Image 1 (tube, protein in one colour):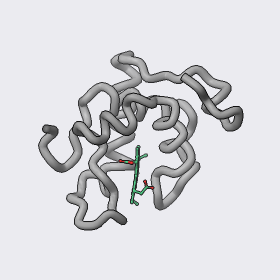
Image 2 (image 1 turned 135 degrees about the vertical axis):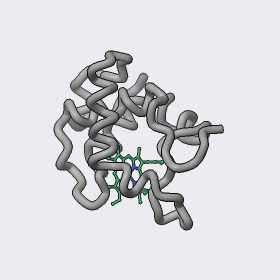
Image 3 (image 1 turned 60 degrees about the vertical axis):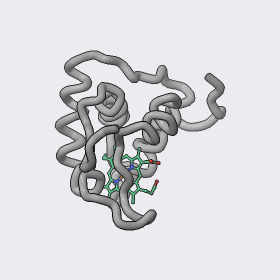
Image 4 (image 1 turned 180 degrees about the horizontal axis):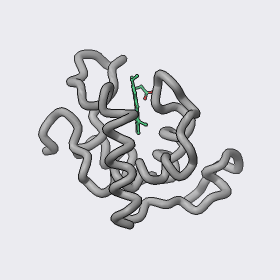
Length: 107
Ligand code: HEC
């Protein structure tokens, strides 16, 4: 996978593991830091999209390094850059695990 030569994620191994502890940490973090926006049904394109389902899988789970950077640097949108590296990794693991379905049923 080609990574741009900048930023934290380019120099760290991408951790999208199925380590149960990491997934569990990510699920808790999601509830605390993400669900308020991402579990609310989106009414417009400005609102938070569901972080599950086929579109999300295709756009992001095929590119875990990009997902990690997106989360690490631009989320939570009301306080970006405040997650620790390990927290961003745990969130990627949780999203990849399929345990976070968001507001709508996953098709
Ligand atoms: C204050 C509301 C808010 C919070 C809290 C928030 N987000 Fe978001 N998020 C958004 C909005 C709005 C977008 C769409 C605009 C964008 O991509 O920046 C978005 C987009 C995303 C995307 C890209 C989705 C796509 O389909 O392109 C990801 C991934 C994401 N957020 C992850 C997270 C994670 C993980 C957290 C928790 C750490 C989080 N967000 C917390 C509002 C929020």
